[in-house]
Structures are given as C-alpha cells and as structure tokens.
Image 1 (cartoon, rainbow, N blue to C red):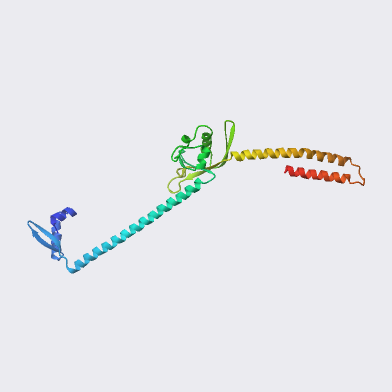
Image 2: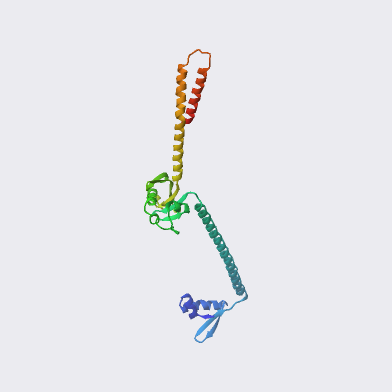
Length: 271
C-alpha cells in the first residue's frame, strides 16, 4: 500500500504524472483506491488471473534463485578443485626440481631469484632460508662464487663449461642457459617477452680431476710398457736383418713372430 507521493520517491517521477497512471490502473481493476485524508492510498486488487500470474512469477523467481544457488555452489566446487589441482601440480613440480641432481636457478631481468633448488644453493654456497625475490649478488659471498654468477649472467644462451680459480684451486662448472619467456600476451614485442634466465648447472670439478688422474695413469702405463716393447721390436728387427739366409733352422721365423707380435701390442697401446 502506498500513495502517489510515496511512489514518486521510489521511481523519481512527479506525483501528478504517477496519479494519472494509478487512476488508469484503478479503472482496469488492478488497483483499489482508498481515501486517507488529503491523499489517496492505492493497493492491489488481485483478481484470480492476476493473483495466479503473480504467484507464478514468485514461483519462477524462487525456482531460478534455487538454480542460481546450485550453479554458484557447483562453480565454487569446480573452482576449489581447480585450485587444489594447481597446488598439487605446483607441489609436484617443486618436488621434481628439488630432487634433481642438477642445480636449478631461475632469475628475472634484475637478477632476482624466482626459483632455486637445494643443489644450486649448495653449489653457490647460499645459506639464506628464503632466497626467493632477493638479488642473487646480495646472497653470494664475494670471491669465487660471485665471479661464477657474474660469468653465468653474462653468457649467451647455450651450454658452457666455466672454469674459476681461487686460492690456486680450480673449479669447473657445466652450465646450460636458456631464456625465460612470457608468451601469454601476443600484443607485447619480442624484447618484452624476455623476462629472465633459466640456469641449469653442475659442479664437474671432481669429474675433471678424475679425468686428469685417468689420463696421467694411462700416460704412465703406456710409457712403461712401450719402452721395453720398443726394445724388443728394435732388437728383433736387427736380428732378422743379420740372420743368415737359407739356413734350415727356424731362427728367422721365430724372430719374425716376436717382431710382429710386438708391433701388434704397440698398435693396441697407441689406439
């Protein structure tokens, strides 16, 4: 129940304009007019068909509100599942990176750490428990490790073998550098797509030391074997050349066998 003055405040139309429409609705039997002092009050005069129509409208509204609530609940459930899946996949990726034998380091353009695993922290001697977001140069102590990071950040994409030296100790690292790109937006230019570097590296100092030991060992063994072998070959060659031709004994034959066998062993050593 309301008056034309009351309705005008709701719909922001002058009362005289509303009164014309209200009187029209009174004539059609949709509204009833009641006098209340200087004002007239209007209320619905619901005949059966209007009552049924309004009832259906409310029922439909209730039905769709229920459906919307169900859809909102389903949407929230899907969103929660999607969020859980993202967290699960992120956890898997973190576990994989953390358990890799290689050191993984991801830097942005300002050399701030986006991702680093424990192997990379060990190689770079980083002891900070929460390195993400910090500049790599502030975490690495001056000296060899800082020089290593400087070399890495200056290198082009690809695989490199880097050697550093501190206190007369040589260290070797195998480093793979690739570009970190943002390909989510097609409207940005090529340079803006480059947002950092992905660095994968191994400390191969021990492998290099083992390789040197192996090479030294092989050189020593081959030298120690080749010296007496060369003596055998040279002396047997001399005896073959000096042996008397046409003799019935097998001296020349045996010397030839010694000489050929010595040459075969020498060939194997050289290979």
